[in-house]
Structures are given as structure tokens and as C-alpha cells.
Image 1: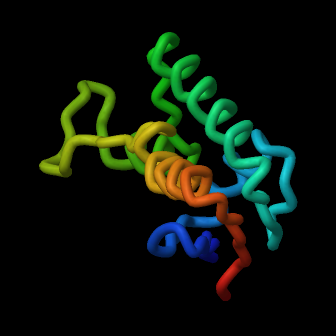
Image 2: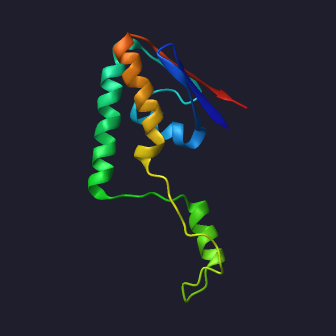
Image 3: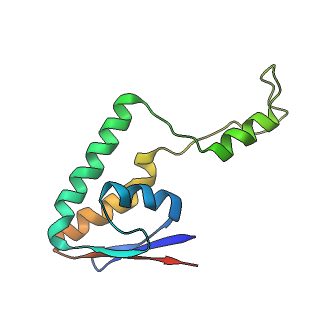
Length: 119
């Protein structure tokens, strides 16, 4: 499922629910729908920036279990890739960037950020 973040300060941001949930957990917000008020945007920006800095410092590149299973299934014990593409992961900072930019715009224009889940 997708989560759509909306603000009058910028274009909509679509994110897979599993990735949005991680961000919303950091912000102590409901996963299904909610609001980051204009007054909360500055704190939300600081929280996301801190998480990004922490993860970059640790050089963590989280890979989902599903991707790990797929890699194991397509590679043999010699490490041959059976002509499959190299595994490329998307970092938390890359996933969070569009929402972080929305929060910055909302903060600048004193606007709220709303979201809900699309089926």
C-alpha cells in the first residue's frame, strides 16, 4: 500500500507504507492517517536529520529480509550471480528526502503536512 503525504507548501509525496511507517514511528505519529502541524514541522525536521546523520555515521544500509532471501536464492556458494543484476539498496536518507523537503517547505510557509493510506 502507498501513503500519500500532502501539504499546501509542496507537491504530494508517495511512499510505500513500510517505509513511511519507519518515519512515522520516529515522529510518534499514527501510520494510517494524521497531521504534522505547522508548529511540529521544525521538530520533525530535526528528528529526521538526526536519524539520517546517525545512520550515515554508522554506514548502515538496511536490506529487507525479502531481498536477502532473493539474493541467496539467485547466488551460489561461490558468489556467482547467475547473470543477475547487482543488489542495490536504497538508504533511509534517500527514502526520507522527499518528505524532509516537504517538511522544510511546510515549515517555511507555516503549513501542515497530512497523510493517509491509498489502497
